[in-house]
Figure 1 (cartoon, rainbow, N blue to C red):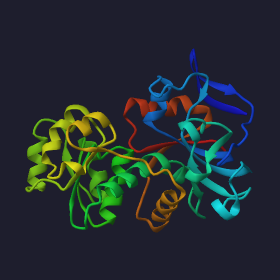
Figure 2: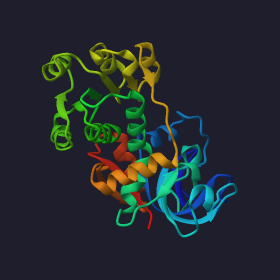
Figure 3: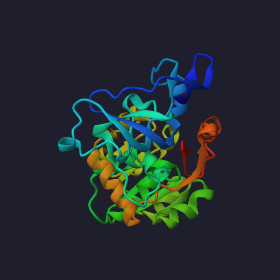
Figure 4: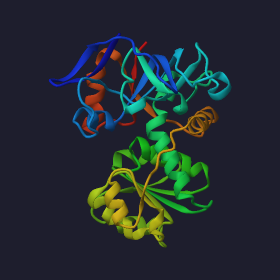
Length: 301
């Protein structure tokens, strides 16, 4: 099969054997795959994955084989099912065939495009898990620091759907998008605290940070209960400031719920760029540049 990943000499298309599904795995004939910042970080060695390796951590496609310990009675999957989910080890999705964790896979609803669900496990899944852990009551105020990215856009929508008031920091070009999804946009940069206080005079009940560094240090004092400060960009600093890390709940029920929200029109993954597989390099370069206006997907077939 053809795949796209990296070798010791850099990114490359690879010719590889079709993998075999292991325990708790599905072998999926890939239709579409998501592109995330973590993909170029894998390539650059951030997660200790040695080359050669296939990039991509989420995909959608057709089940063609089922590994051990995956039965219809337990997981509800069969050959021929259209599914989406995450790959074991956070690699392997950008290929004609990919192993998908059965425990982190769900059926693709009828009428929903593969590209739409392929981008749910990483960004929307992270937002969903963070919202569950922050556990804000209806009517609370949530600050999303960096609301214009994939996780931020999903978080705004999920939080608004739960009856939260959402304030989101973002570049001016993303303000219309945040407003469209029900959030209150605030510009980044000098004076951001004052601008947040103008729309949330009493501070905020919780915050999800997707930026890290000085931007995280700046907004942290606005959170009344620091145990409800979570960072996905700067885990250690978030904890140092009294917050917490976001613990991922990579399970079928989470993905099934996200798919239901998509069908209901409550959640729009905001896929704005779909590249053919032959342009995988360009898709990754766009995400790495930071100039993507929404989620980026690769269409395999």
